[in-house]
Image 1 (spheres, each protein chain N blue to C red):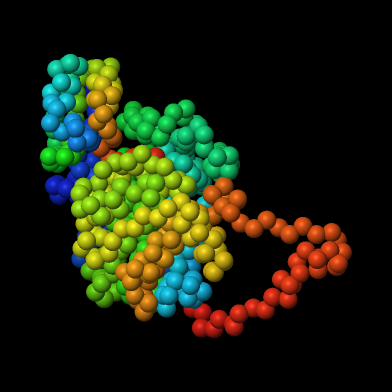
Image 2: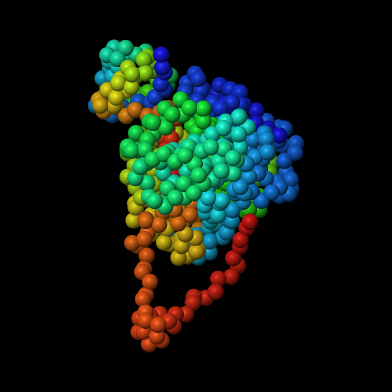
Length: 80
Length: 422
């Protein structure tokens, strides 16, 4: 089993959608939210995703295709 | 010996031992080094610092390194009063901190010196980073000096000059086919998989501490005082938070007086998540960078939240300037003070210009602008924007014809009272 720590940033139109629920259901991964800030028109969630590496990768790809931005928890690692 | 005591989560304040960790296991917040300031205050004085080497290691008591560090003489770069630029902007006490004068010509040598020293101390055989320029140059050079292997990841379409400026030091240089986000993702995964010290990932808490030396030097070179205003170019935001931490540490130790500095964050409009958040009063939202200031092109700034807090607490603000203003800023700094800075320097000067015009920085305030890297690294940004040479035949007649009246140019009244420090 693998684990990945990621940050999701939601655009306004996806704030009310149960994206994390569907991620867990469709890709057989366990999601564990550690920090979040969600308001009516915006939101971010820091979470750990655990499961088979292949499932995690497919799941995160699906989240990104929904329009949610997926980032490493420590921010961008490519620096100037 | 080091006075570093532990790592502490910047969000939930849980403490961890001094190991290669970078996020809190509980809340995934970032970690920061904390020190035994009482012990430091027993031995550290203005005099003991002044007796130290003329590089960042004169502040070793405030850095998290135990063993003999990797020393390429990073730091102790010039701070000078910028009379000409100050006159152009209406600022009477403007100072430039010229960090182009580092071993690989950028402020990254400060952070990398600490990171590579710490990596060796932890027993790592290899260091790594993902970079579009300055960080790559510095990690490759410091690894060479330390006798360590370096893995450097760059976007495949990086300019030749930047590739050469890294390749010359002999690292394993990997050009990744993919966009910025893909390079980001790949490097985050590699950092978890391979036993490397990824300088800005698994040893980031130590790496970031090197930036504090910029604040220490500014205070020392100003005669042991904090400036009224500091303009800081902002990418991840780490530099600004560490300048703030550094000034407050000196004050806490009684080495300088009260810190009344206002900090100003300078960003490029094409990548200004922090400036946007400051203006709107909302949290930082990641963006896709699109600016000539590539060294500041971090769309998801790790320290954005902390930068916003400092700007508000200090009474400063954030500014975002256009690519045209950046180029104008680079030219203005070069033409007034003889300093050729890279695009990030253009962002700083253009932001300073705007802040002075708005009255956010007053003419008589002691102001410091941080110039963080050399312009020779980003010549493509200005190569079409400077006057071409005047071509003449090898005769006096041709010279007089082509140069004309300009041959009889009279200099403006001589500037006196220039003050240079360090």
